[in-house]
Length: 388
Image (cartoon, rainbow, N blue to C red):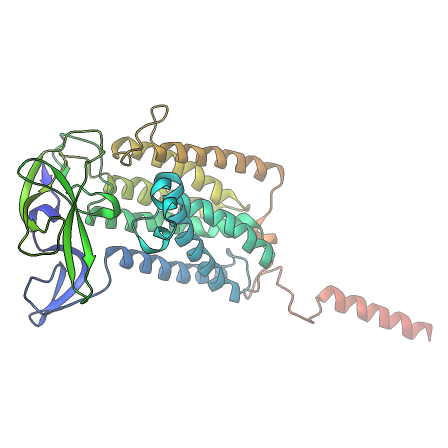
């Protein structure tokens, strides 16, 4: 059994870098009483920023190679459209698929409570938004989606590693040697603690009028469907009050040893999927082939990985499957349907216009004449001269 760093290291933090005592410190919190500067970048910010930069670079490379067939100025625009779709879709998907009552009872929580994103929401909303974007720039819908799927796989690697480092989305119980204990989390990833009477509470951070932070405890009963042993480090938190003289001795609540399923998903839905998509991209000649392979491969790999991942609190199982598995299997069905459309009405990638140098057909520039038009005009002029 292994303890997550949040348990074994009191100074562990997902802040990428902090600076105090005249030196940089990585993935550690600033000790109390020490004046220091902490970078406002955590592991998720680093992951998303890396994905964004890689997407811009690779899309320009594909444009030059002629595999991403749009105008040069539309390369960056397409990436930005995808980013907007991912952010909005990820939040809406989290609300619709996993926590509808929590978010839609107070819709402003969608903007103010950055508690998570769901990849199924990201994928679905990107598909919808790209339909409109494809019509706007007059390119095949799935040609644009074909460019995005590799970044989903690459992003999954970084995203799941960030999930592991932040100790969320852990797996089901296990007795394997690498099984890990994680600190239990409540809504918005709040820490869960217990008092000597084994009552459980959620630690809530409040912003005080003077700009400082304070904590209070709210009674909270874990809804996970299994027993939780109470062990770990002791903390002092104010109970129902910000008065420092009112304290409750509380201890961190830990899970039983569990699969580090975040790493399993980084390997299956990340590394393995990325290798599959890279190989398919090298051979793909028709629009939609890459998207079809992505939908089927991701759906199958995610369904397998979900057998090791703990279902979301309160959701449980439907027909013996988790919510994530049901959504993933729907992706497999979508991929099969897409291959059916490709077979009936194939669109060759090489026939899509581009303004990348050295490739045909070229995108016609405004007021420019094609070689066929010039030839026709010259023939017409010659005929006129003969007539005269």
